[in-house]
Length: 323
Image 1 (tube, rainbow, N blue to C red):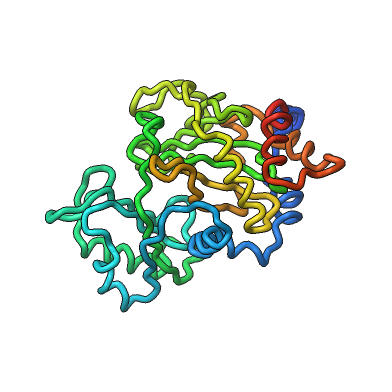
Image 2: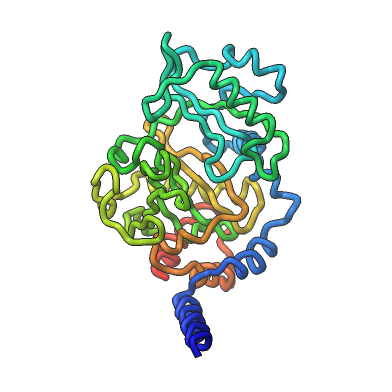
């Protein structure tokens, strides 16, 4: 009887999720990723260096590329690539979930300063790059390359909303239409990374305005940032139209029909594309307190698809935002 009661509760829970239009992993994988994302296009987004090259060729704004280390024998020349005083970021081209990303905010005669304040040496950085090349952080453990980018200076409007790390904005796109968005804020628990599974905060964003609708950490609603005490529901992302247009342009750039675009708002350069994801997670639904399916269905059922980027963004803000 206990087993039947448990089964009944599980069935009821699934039924409620379906009624709310929540997209599950199996349906996402079969009906959207497998159907709309051709396998031969995956390397364009799984490899950050390919994504950056593709974006630059398409005129999509990305953080400035400082250099690339491809071979172990090039590590000894790493110091020639690094800025003398300014900050920079080193990341594995094939990494995922924020693994292997090293952020240096400044450097002086004493060494290189991480965002947490700790100081590391050039030898430490060289060792990190060697680990990247060996595939320590890459998908499947395959050999990788190290990408060195200019440090992002996030817009001061986000001061106090994130702990150490840079806030990023995840937009889910379906056939070029923005269908859902959230901003991810790092915490002490997430070690300065914007990864929700590691304890970062996800704040759902109204598709029409860029205003916060709900904030969650570990899938539980919260009102204040756990480290800074900042009111999370007061967030309103500026340059919202430009951010959505940048996200939508990624569909035209790479051809993947179901896509996650990770963006940042730089104080000097405005909206920038960080990376793309051909298998975006589903926690964005928790952050927004609504399911993806009604919006995905609305895009699928349009009798005449809007062809231009601006039309897609306008439809998302005027119609999809209400679903």
